[in-house]
Each structure stands twice: as C-alpha cells, then as structure tokens.
Amino acid sequence: MAILIDPPVWPAHGQLWAHLVSDTSLDELHAFAAAAGVPRRGFERDHYDIPASSYDALVAAGASPVSVRDVVRRLTVSGLRKRKADAMAPRAPGRQLLRPPRLHSGDLVAVVTTAGPVLPERLAAGVARLESWGLRVRMGDHVLDRHPRLAHLAGIDVDQAADLSAAWMDSDVRAVFAARGGYGTQRILDLLDWRRLAEADPKALIGFSDLTVLHQAVAARLGLASVHGPVVSSLGEATGDSADRLRRLLFDPDEVVDLLAGIESTTWVPGRADGILVGGNLAMLTAELGTSFDRPSTNGIVVLEDIAEAPHRVDRQLTQLQRNGWFDDVQGVVLGDFTDCGDPAQLDAVLLERLGPLGVPIIGGVDFGHTRGSISIPLGVTATLDADAHSLTLKRPPLR
Image (cartoon, rainbow, N blue to C red; front, side, top):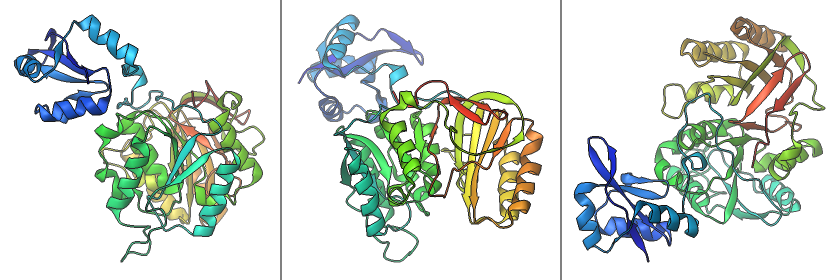
C-alpha cells in the first residue's frame, strides 16, 4: 500500500489543505483514512481533503510526504485519478450531464427491483432478450421478493436499497436495469449513500414509470445521464422495434440521431428549440416536488407520459408543477402515451390548456410510455425538438 500526502498549500475556508491519496486502490485509501480518524465526508473523487493541522499526524501514521506534482503523476499512472468533469457529482439543472459508457457484447449487467412485485415468467422473458444481445445478466439477491405485509411492494426497503447499491458499486457491472415499475422506488432513495455511489464508475441506468424518481435522483445527486426505457419485465413483451431502439441506444449510440425517426407524432405548438432532455412519468415527477431529488425542467425539453390518471388528476399534477416553478425556463415539450387516462379528447384538452401557454414547441401522440412499442429516451443530454419536422435530434451520442 502506498498512501501519499502532498503539502498543505491549498487555501480554502480560512485555512490550508493537503490531499491524501493512494496510488494502489481507493479501498486501501479509505481503510487508512478510517484507521487514522479521517472522516469519510472529506473524500472527493480520488482524494481526501486534509487540514494543515492534521498533516503531521497522518505522516506519523504512515502517509508518505510527496510533492503536489508527484501526487498527480502517481494518481494518473495508477489510473485512479478522476477529473472533475469525468466524475459523478451534482450538476446544476439545465446543464448536460455526464454520459455513461456504452455497452459491448459480453458485458455484465445487473437487474434489481426497487418497486412492485415481479412475475418470474415476465422477468425470464426480458432476461432472455438481454442475453440475446450478448449481455451477461446478474440478478439482485432480492429481485423476486415480496413484502411480508404490503402487497404492492416487491420486498423490504433496506433489501432493495442494498441490491441497488451492490450493483452500482460493483466495478464489473456495466449497467443497471430495473426489473419492474409499479411503486416503491421513492421509499429507498433516502436509504442510499449517495456520496459513496458517486465514487463508483459511471454506468447506465435503464427503467421507466416509477423509476422516474431514480432517474431524477441520479441526475440531481450524481450528475449522470440515464435512459428512460423498458424495464426487464416489459422488455420480453416489447415489440421488435422498441427492443431494437433500446439495444442501439445502449450498444451503438453513434447511430442514434433522431429519436422520433419512424414514429408518428402530432404538432400541437409549432417551433424549434434546443434543451436538455428531462422528465418521465408525470405522477412521479409531481410526487418528488420539494425533495432534494427533484430536478426541474430548466433549459429542458420535457418528455411526459402516464398511466391510469383521469384527466382531472393530470390537470392537478400539471398545475402543481407549474405553481412550484417546475416548468420555468422550459424550452419544449414531448407528450408520450397517456395510457388508460380516460376520455382522450378531455385529456388532450387538459394538456393543451395547461401546457400551451408555456409558449414553447409541443408535439404529442409519441409512442413513449406504457406501451409495447415505446421508444427509449436518454435523459440529461442535449437535443433539438423540431415540432414542425416531427423530430427530436440528439446533439451527440447519448452514451460515450
């Protein structure tokens, strides 16, 4: 183990600071810091910030004094250096987020449950589809659990949070797929150690519906783009085009340019706008208002969908979002499928009355949401909405 510390020459908060690093592994760095009484909250990306008053004690505990230049060099050579631009960290709303790496045949992906109970046969069909893409699939320990008292939940909150954390922190896992939507993801958000999750390598998160709150949280706390796409239990029943769109987005993102290519849509309000893709399930976006995981539509092109919400409930949710300023500085709106949401004419009237006054381009009728043919949409990346041309064009590949 090589624990290094540079001189306390960095001014901040009225004192000088040093950097404590390891050129071997972060696990060894954390172990040394814990043994020396350095609080975990002092860790940032690849180092601990150390006040000058603690410098001598850490050297006495075994940290090797080196120059600032040597710290940078040895971190870089070891592959442990994480530049701020490449690390997961909170980013202000309206900014493009850090893109996760694309997938390759042979990659290991994890399947976790954070919401409703999963039917084994539907899960198996979705896993088979993932495996047909050349992926290796690992199930979370509690994917098929059932809550002992609450029938709408897949399992105990702490178990679901542990599965998600384990998958996210596993350096061999390249992406995390949600097994199912339903309800329950909100319950685990406060159980996750977001500071620790930020230490992991970025990876793709895929899911929709109830998973909207996790997309919002990953964007707000980790500054990471994610994919609003089929959960595993719906992937097996997805149309061939829907599944292929998700596969191409994950494996060949350079080929994904216009997300609406070949998809029918209707121009509600004409115009063209650039913005960051944000949104998902309307009910879940509304439910997160006022929490630390909420991410508004600042400089955003909002995508919205829902299921089993009567027109008056959709009206109430949109009104609540507007009253809280969630739509402030929105640039455009893409309306997906509002499945089983009552009289379509009444629903359209609500959507147009609530969203039309925003004065931004709007298209509707997009096959996006709780349908077998739903398209996948990357969240947190820049796109251009052209309501007249019925296109939603990405500025650059959604995964790197």
